[in-house]
Each structure stands twice: as structure tokens, then as C-alpha cells.
Length: 243
Picture 1 (tube, rainbow, N blue to C red):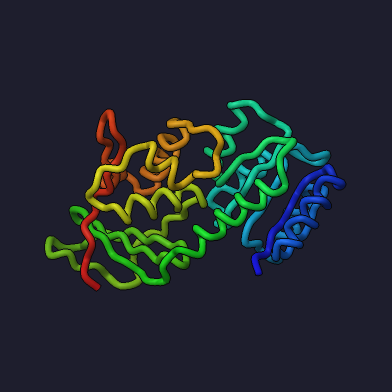
Picture 2: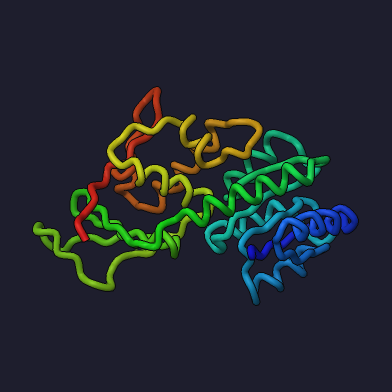
């Protein structure tokens, strides 16, 4: 049973949302304030979070910004703020989906189900990829990536070394799709449709921003690992190493 946090200062709407999700087999906990949500996250992490952006005790957008890279559970923004800038900024900070009020309880539940289904599809196996003198180790189930550099031309990598790369939930979905299609051209439209299928509108800028952030986490070789194919999209350039 998936464990879902719902944060919304509109307690009547939040309770209805909880009741609807509970009926459909989810276990939910509700919060009226960001401070209560933050305290809960220090104790137990949910499988998914649904959150407003406006609260009496803080700004949900600032919460998303701080949560980026710290938490790796999916986040759905369900807000009365409906501007394009709010949507884009929320995706840039790592949210997985964005719905505006008023929304259908049934539609929101379907979005929750789709996101959690994608999360469960991850493989538990690790894989290793190399490029030039670097190696990327990926544990799909743990959402963990480690970048190591060879100390010799023969590609000898020390065990236990390397730098852990922490991706947001949205960045992780993009990485999974790129690595799964290593060596192939992947269009922005493919990334949008596969990684953000619940979004009612498509923004190429969302993909470009996430790619920029992913590359930055790879360091100076970021553009080598993920190549830009002008006028089309991107290609993951790593070569898989045998286990």
C-alpha cells in the first residue's frame, strides 16, 4: 500500500482528497501547514507527496526548492496558482506533475497511480557505464548514481571511490529514459511524453532545464555524457560495461 502525504491549507478539500485516495487503496496523511509537513518528513518519508504552493506559514515554492536533491520521492503540485511561470518553476525544482484547482479527484488519482507505477518499474540491478576515463555506476532501485574516474589509462577504478550524484525525482526519470536508450537519439517530445505524461501542456524548456542541471552534476564532462543533437534532442553517450 503506497503511503501518501497531502499538504494543503484548504482542510475541507484536503480531507476529500484523502478520502478519495483512501477508498482507492492508498494510505494518506494530511497537513494544513508546511511546518507540520517538514517535521513529518524528518521522521518518515512518503512514497509520494501532493502539495499546494500557498500556505499560511510559508511558500510552497521555497519548500520545493529546498526539497530538490534532498528527497527522492515523487511530488505532485496541486495548486490554485495557474500561471505558466509557476508551472515551469515547479518542474525546474523537481516536481513530477502539476494540476490546477479545481481538479477532478478521479484524474488526480489516475495521475498518482501512473507516477507510482513508473516508480515500481525500476530494475533492482546495478549497471556500469564508461566514457573516456570515467565510469558511472547506477543502482536503479536505490536511485543512486556514482561517478568515478580512472587512475590509469587501463581503466582501473578503485572500489568504494567516486562521487555520489543526487538527482531529483524528475531528473532521475529523464536519466532512466536516456540510459535505457543509450546511443540512440531521443527527442524532447519523447522525453516529455515518457517522463511527464500527466502534464496537460508540454514545455521544451522543462526538458532543457533538467538536462542542464543533470550535466552540471556530472561536472566538466556533463556535455560529453549527454550530447545535444541540434534540432532533435539528446543522446546518452556512455558505453555499458559488462558485469
